[in-house]
Image 1 (cartoon, helix red, strand yellow):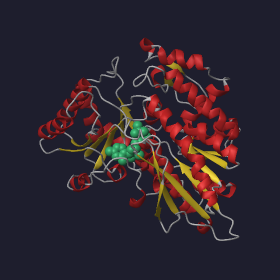
Image 2 (cartoon, rainbow, N blue to C red):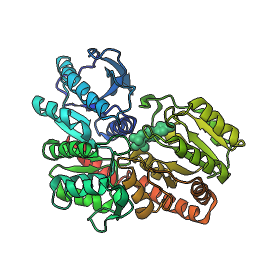
Image 3 (tube, protein in one colour):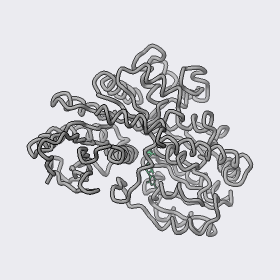
Image 4 (tube, rainbow, N blue to C red):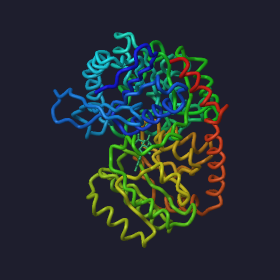
Length: 478
Ligand code: UDP
């Protein structure tokens, strides 16, 4: 049952609706916890987080409640038949929007009937249709959460406003396979120097990158004109020009209030997979900064030849490693035998898990580098823990993030010379770059830069830190 508000009490009831994908669930939950932590009058703020579970029946709209943290944070279990499918398929993505649409109004009316009216929807920018429509229809304010970088949003905004970049220019660059290593732009305000391949694309999973761009474009335009505010998981000192250009150019108030990873708590995990804690015990046994953590996030898939090249490179580098071999990570391979093969060839230098408690791993003193697909969450988690990154981007915003990691923040390496056609990186280069990151002089410089960036990020929630000031302004505005 939902708890009722005390009579006469002015309350804010935030209903948080994530996209059912790991990289979108984690930041939304962390932001909810951040709101609860920093709201001055905690008793008057109630946050309800919508959790999806895999229902068997597409007609099942039933939901149930779970309470956390002295009943201030409650979670509603909500059925979503396609939950086990990766959202990277466009069909599953649109299914998730239909599922949200079918249940959201119903859920809000349930709260209204039980005396805890929803006053604010907190939803992903990508769920603008239908959540902004529902908010407008019911007269509720909506705050949209953008779960990637300010640079990515700036790029979207330029295309949406059609003044600096057109959709045609972007599509032409993305679709020109033979020109992928050529310069796309030298001086687009607020963006790093980009190559064609750095533009967010989806060619690796679907053929229709343009459909995704057009959808994101429409969602952003509606957010920019109809949302109450937009929050981004970044901070001013990390992306100063992108943040400042966005606040000048956008009609909606923007709050760059990251980094939300200061909010950690076991009982509000949003992990869709079971985390294998044994790797922490193994890390405890390893020397400081000696371990390479390898993870490609929740959706990226490696081809078999790429996996084999990576395995050779990792083993030949002779470095210690912790590898997240998510079931389904490698195309066309038996997961169990792949794990066994890695372990048997590692000569006790390696540990393999299906899924790791990533934040605990990255904050462990034994971890000296992160071989990452550069999803935005992995990027911010690595930066916040001062861990240098070996960039292995695949799709979406990952190349753009990698460009910032390598060229702007100088906290990572990429594989410059050997990326061939369909992302085949040679094992020899992998071996050399891993060695250089973990025990080379250049790796030491990156680690020092990463430590400095970590210090900066940890100050953004100090008493006069940029993120805290903006968060306070946002809370006052709610
Ligand atoms: N993650 C995790 N354990 C793993 C791998 C990833 O907890 O073994 C988490 C990670 O901490 C991050 C999220 O999954 O919060 C992945 O998000 P990201 O944006 O990096 O990539 P995506 O999965 O969206 O491609």
